[in-house]
Amino acid sequence: MARNVYLTHQTLSLKQARTIVEAALAYAAAQSMNPITVTVMDTSGHPISCDRADGCATLRLAVSHGKAKAALGYGLSSGTIGERNQARPSFLSAVASASQGEFVPVAGGVLILDEQERVIGAVGVSGDSSDNDERAAMAGIEAASLRAGLAPEN
Image 1 (tube, rainbow, N blue to C red):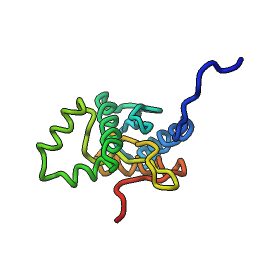
Image 2 (image 1 turned 120 degrees about the horizontal axis):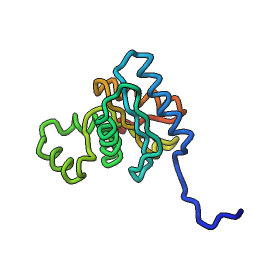
Image 3 (image 1 turned 45 degrees about the horizontal axis):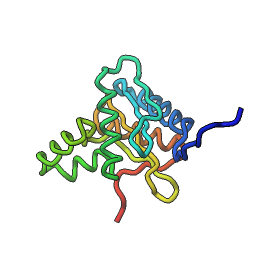
């Protein structure tokens, strides 16, 4: 049967997103991390794939979502956003409020870059320490043969 709708151009496939999720979960298990939740989003901030490890607390989904959204919203990793704005808690609070809670500026949200270092999505991980969450996100991105974006090098 012929299609009766136009297809949307996607820069990050479901297969790539699933690879990122599975590799991040595997990394966490191999490192004996606490159970994590992994969310992969497209550039519009919509989830492509998401999984929660057995035993992971339910609120981790919202946190992983917020970390990925923060990275997408600012073009930097969520941890970099938090570090650069440590002296500006009112600003961070205002952005969190303006985004209706979908902005979590702590490590664990990492941009996914193409070969030209353009953003094609983001990964958010929550469940362990923020630094470990970020490491799991990066391991997932690398397993999909993509590039992780924390902050541009000047």
